[in-house]
Length: 43
Image 1 (cartoon, rainbow, N blue to C red):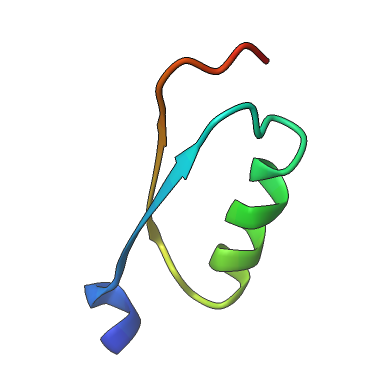
Image 2: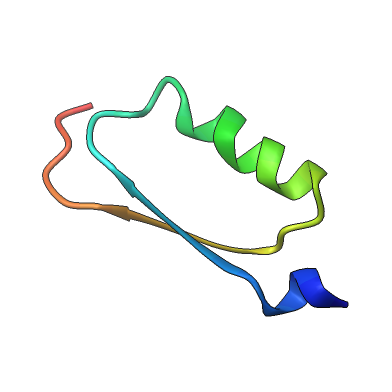
């Protein structure tokens, strides 16, 4: 399947309140390769 070849990289900074919904939305559409990159958040 084409979605298996897609890798999503999400850069975040202080997104604790929203990142869960973003990941769930991507998974809902069948995306499984998801990387969240955080460098210096305070939350």
